[in-house]
Image (cartoon, rainbow, N blue to C red; front, side):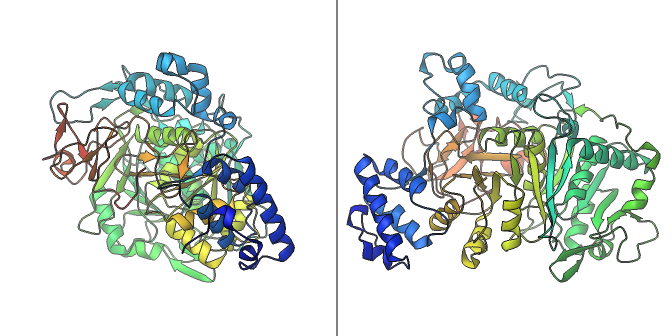
Length: 596
């Protein structure tokens, strides 16, 4: 559709969109004032998005303003521009205001102007950057690392060895109070579908810690071997978060299984991981439907199952003789309620979670997360999404996929609160939860946004608490994300592209950079990207080009092993080198994203 330039728009054009005459007249008058007072299209757009546009105006008017403003601008016009004063209050902004000259010397100007230089610094100075970020996150080590990165000289592990000599427990870091929070801070806000007119439920750090300790004691009572693989096949709810943290706190390894999987898919993952037990739910309740889950676990011939009731305190079916209800499982540790569970501190390279590729083209790759992977998730949230104490972070996901564990660590290690909706995220009840839980960082996938827009399910709900959106999983659409930004008075969408193998992103956005729609603005912190030409040679930095994306292997938190494959052969064998260093292809992750 062809849009007029802003100075050509008339009152009749606005009325044609279904806006009344009086309102159209005022909108046009405000628009003319902005045009006369602005010098550049980005400046004009920012004023329009702040002073004129609001969610109750037809989206067609939002489009008229956006495309009219940028009619002759060229590609990738910014839909959001950082305010320097606000940028200085972000996590990275505060760090750069304090230490920017130390890191960048005379090249440092201010957080916004110097962000790209700081990203380059994070790549060239991993020892300084990652020590700084781990300190900012207040990460607790029972034994500190000898150094940050020990580079590989044998060629067998191109990514090197991160945090050699360190011992830690990621769950302990989620449950520790310190300078970022108090024991009475709310760390989970949740609601069950069907209870949408009731107040949002809350859980404090003290309450979460107590319940995780109890579940960890109950796990120990099962008598499993150290570092046993224990599966979780449940919706993303309060109980599954408690279970996840308890498994990690006790030094075992979570096996992530999506609650949508068939018995065959469940069985495959249990066999690959050699799981000794599984936590599941009796059923999944979605509206009037009750979807069997325990039945699928039984059909998968799973080992010992601990079954959480979807509603109430009793399971809806008879369990196998060897299986335990959630209440009976916790009853094994009833005398230890309130007693601290001493975290099992493990080496940095010890496994903490086994996740899987989709398996659509064959047996799924079993990808172990180490104790470092959660730190990558938390660091990405700290830098790219600016998650802070006081934020409420919601992201419709599941512990069976990497964004589930990511949400746990990204929220809790940063001192923020998780927002969990135990139901479908597609309708107005989820939009109401975002409002009622006062969500400030909302993660999405494009197909969910498309459904919201087509059904108008966010209409009437106040999303003004949102500071930014995050988006991952699929290629984004410009108009859909213009609509999404408009629901929250034009807060930015931070594209977040990575993979299970990385524990986070390799390319993203930042609140210290202008953000265009459906586009990235920066490589992830600590990450060096290449674009390979048709001969598999890296295109020089800052040169225009089209090709396959590749990654320098020195990536904090990235996996270096596979349970059911040769990691080097899968990811590095046959790949080109750059300055003597083999580089890693990214074709196994996402395709179809637009870079700017």
